[in-house]
Each structure stands twice: as structure tokens, then as C-alpha cells.
Length: 97
Image (cartoon, rainbow, N blue to C red; front, side, top):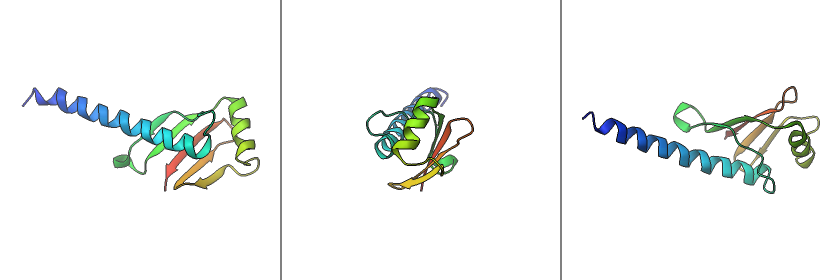
């Protein structure tokens, strides 16, 4: 029974890594398909809605805002996801709807 714990931990780790990669790929395809600037901490479904949280470099933040026409508004819904850009510090959240 004790020998199953490392195997279970490995399987959970692999599942987390796969879900993180897939969700990050979806986020980049929806909001930044050319540069793929979005990456960060992934919170999977059992914790809440799948969410990606991270930060953007100031230059990347300006590029994303102009690309998505988010100069005044920091929220955009697209492809079943909601992108929230915080202007104060360049952080972002992407929630699956």
C-alpha cells in the first residue's frame, strides 16, 4: 500500500503537467497566437475553474493591450475564456468560462 503512494503522486504530477500545457496552449492560441507570451501558475479544475495566473513584461503587456485593443478595458472574453489584465502591475488571470 505504501508503495502505491509514489506511483499515485507521479500520475497526479503527470496529469497536472499535461493539463497545464494544454490550457496554456489554449490561452496562447486565443489571445497571443504569434508570440505565445502567456505562461504562469495553473490552477486546475478541482480547485475552481481552470485558471492561468502570471505576469507580463511591460513591453509584452503593451503589445498585448494594443493587439487586443484593451487600452482602457482590461477584460476580454474569447473562445470560452476570460482574460483579465491588471494595468497596475502587468499581471493577468485567464479563467475558463
